[in-house]
Image 1 (spheres, helix red, strand yellow):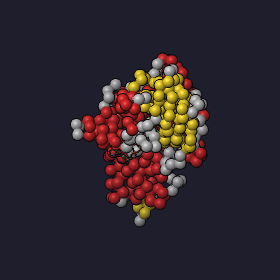
Image 2 (cartoon, rainbow, N blue to C red):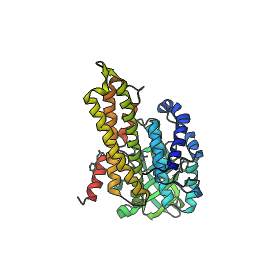
Image 3 (spheres, helix red, strand yellow):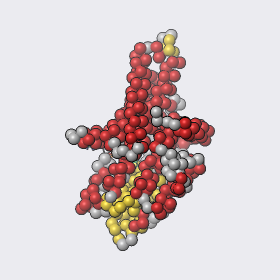
Length: 377
Ligand SMILES: Cc1cc2nc3c(=O)[nH]c(=O)nc-3n(C[C@H](O)[C@H](O)[C@H](O)COP(=O)(O)OP(=O)(O)OC[C@H]3O[C@@H](n4cnc5c(N)ncnc54)[C@H](O)[C@@H]3O)c2cc1C
């Protein structure tokens, strides 16, 4: 219903590349994070611009091309790599494409599509995550520059990025209408990566803390209209949640398939464990939830692709897909028993990686707050 022959060809192409050039290195990348050069390789193959127009070096595809990429990345089971690529293609660059000027698109979007520039999106701060309006990073206008001061935390691609799209307050007095999105290049005096953070999962990605100290950023780096940053960020977050949902449920489907196969082959008390009713029912619950949510994710992605702004459904899809991904990974470990807890079996990493998606791009609780508002509650 949603994928054309062109999508399926793209899927085969991506899958072959990932099997050949990514999968053999994944264990090493889990230890040391992946090399920056992987972005160039993705760029050369056109995977960083699947749904951007050809004039910026993109492939001109629709939203389902991005869904295919996210599903195939979920299949190779390195949440960190999938997240880093999604930050590049679905989080940091979309605002440049949607709100940026022609010159800005040529300068930053096109090289990001080619994989020559790595991008990050910096919203979260040590004292403000869910409550974006409470950020304290300030970008004060000074002639044809902004002077940025503040600290950002948990920033994916933060250590390796060439630029970060930074959310800052222009004017503390103006509330939501005082926000700006500023593209700040690495190397700008006053922009520092203060540390990289160790984390539970997503090990192949880097997560950094950034500091801006009297960082002078040309006004030409303002993405979108001055003061429109909050509204524009809310638009960006819809896309971020949509792709998170697509990746999470695809990851759950992969874990489910693996677990079913394992249960068919693992013997206990003289029979495959899949023959115990309790295990059978666990597998049925997993498959049933995945099937239902997958359908809902595709339906919502279609609406997003057609230009609708279905905030309730995007939030519901993100909430459900990420919760079920965690539940499936947890049940998978139970079904694999001790093997499930071991690094040499893939469900252990899936369990660790999946957990983030209930926090990043807006927590479960924030999704529920948003959904509640759409019901007028
Ligand atoms: C590995 C990783 C990568 C990340 N990558 C990025 C990135 O690239 N860029 C970026 O900007 N950020 C990134 N983040 C940050 C992420 O988006 C935030 O962690 C997330 O938005 C939650 O913010 P917080 O951690 O400050 O939690 P808090 O906002 O402090 O929330 C703590 C708890 O309180 C709950 N809570 C808060 N407000 C409410 C409310 N109104 N009602 C009910 N409950 C509430 C939350 O749901 C949560 O359970 C990343 C985080 C991680 C862990």
